[in-house]
Image (cartoon, rainbow, N blue to C red; front, side, top):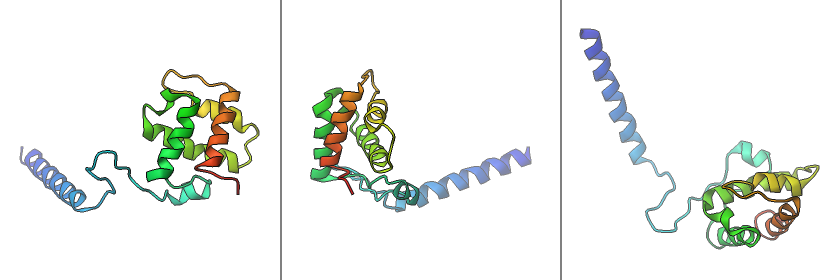
Length: 133
């Protein structure tokens, strides 16, 4: 019984400590409506050619390019932006068929894209998030 109590107290103390530490840190989030979290991306993402998450007008432009192909793709804006960032890696990494890669990457939420749709996405991404190097 004494061991269980000691473990319970230690676990509770650890949980309070962790919560206290995390509440003091700035996680980059804002309470403002429509605020976006700016991230430079991890070293692994940068090495893979994945650009930093866009913010402000750049984010709006990326979402508009995606919306131009199919508005349903931007219902979850964060998911759409994440897919766009990853598609930049395919565009700049010499993917064998970047249009097909885009069609596959953006086929979610009940939306199935064609390679032609993927090509239109790539054109929009080249104009916004991932211009040709």
